[in-house]
Amino acid sequence: MQLHVADHPLIAHKVTVLRDKNTPSPTFRLLVDELVTLLAYEATRQVRVVECEVETPLQPTTGTKIASPAPLIVPILRAGLGMLDGMTRLLPSAEVGFLGLKRDEETLEAITYANRLPDDLTGRQVFLIDPMLATGGSLVAAIEYVLERGATDVTCVCLLAAPEGIERVRTAMGERVDVSVVVAQVDERLNEQGFIVPGLGDAGDRLYGLV
Image (cartoon, rainbow, N blue to C red):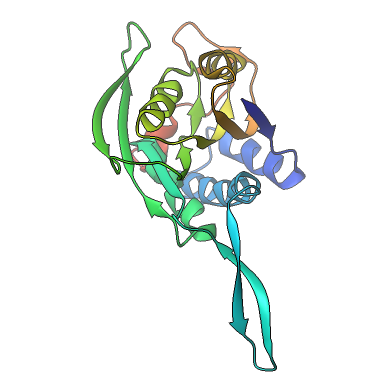
């Protein structure tokens, strides 16, 4: 597993404003959108491309385009939906699938409750998006889900991550597949309830403007 922490002053600034409990929900959602677009730039550095011929106003030239099959962006429901626009803004040709996972509050394990993904992901680059990599249970379950369908190139995009979650993904994946995790910041730890400290609070609810 490869971990990439996007070390940029603008990202650090936006995450700081995002953490502020006094930041209004509309501003929170806007900041998430901006952060995801910045993270998507980092996450797509290895997106597959092919050469193509185009006719410019002056003469033909050789350019580059996204290779087929198109990448697949998979928000982990439901908070991941709040990150979808930021990803598709940079990858408008990508297809979108959905995976619903929820965490058992007692065991902290992920439970799958919805799936709208192609049955065959052979040869597809998959981008999993979720605001928080906390215990790592949901992300590991999502990665395993797409691996079972043939994916071998998986990039996970998260706003924040805890060291415990990163290590869980690293241990679960080992050396068997090409998995990358791109995050804005790595936080200190998890608390007793399995939430990232200092974290973003209930990011899922804030993304949907429920508070």
